Amino acid sequence: MAITPVDYTNPRYDAKALRRFAEEALRKAGQSEAHASELADYLTATDLRGVLSHGTRQLSGYVRSFQSGKYNPKPNIRIYREAGAVVQWDGDGGIGHLVSARAIRSAVSRARTTGICLVTATHCGHTGSVGNWTRIATGAGMICLYYSTPMSRLPFDRPEPVVQALNNPPVSFGFPPAEGEPSVLIDMGVHLELPDVQREIAEISVLPLIKGLAYQVVSVMMTWPVDAQSPVEVRFPGATSSLTAIVLDPAFVGDPSDYTRTVADLRKKVHAMEPLPGLDRALLPGEIEAEREADFGVHGIPLDDTHIQSLRELGDDLGVPCYWEKDG
Image 1: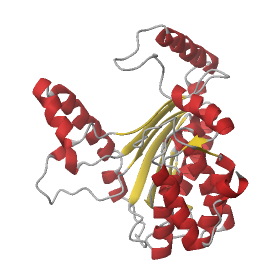
Image 2: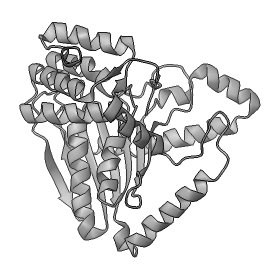
Image 3: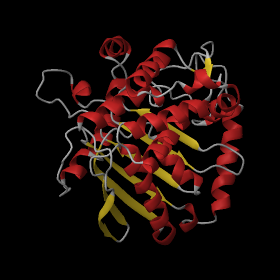
Image 4: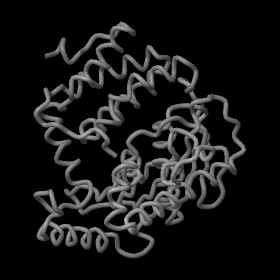
């Protein structure tokens, strides 16, 4: 889900230097060494795929949430209930990345035995670029459908259109590829467009708005009412997010090589088709991110001045060097 577009003319910054900065900043904000290292990996990986709104750009906000007590910097993430093909996690007020990764890994492990696993997690902070979590499943050869609540509570107490009240919950759907190819992976918020753009769309047809609303309703229904069933007490006021995910093992349906071969064939057919208006190629979701990861890993990540200035100011506050400048 990339709110900030990639401008390839921006200066490029070394991913290892950004990761080192992020890890040290998170440790100074109170995270354990292991959790700071893990979260720094996720943020840098997100930048490398070009999802610049959800990578190290979020670092200052995360640090403030740890320092202010909105998030728990040292959560005791645990399974609080499991039965059959269902596993439920307590994020203990920590950042949502940590419990998301553990929840999906547990679902992958359970699905190897049961063929399918439903996993939930409650009481966590921002879940970040949620394509990180479906990639865990697709890397294990499994399908994953991931839903997360938006950061803020649904504002039904204000007079506004329902599509605004339902907010912009993130979703990711991931499908395993043939060997050597990127996962087919969707990572996005379900809010169709901003209000002014919606009004312009409505002048042509209300059908896209109705379909967009349906997508929002599905995303909300997969998370908010499910999380309401949780007995876990909310102890950290900013950690109000939750997640619901389903992981499926294609091997329980048939030969998984037939699945990936069909995906590869579909990819070739899509590449031969006319691209959407305004685009120069027809690709499956996830391919551009894979191309960026290969490019940015070698040539650096293109970041705008606002992004870098935010990190510099954070470094000044915490006493963390800007390693991309020192190393460069």
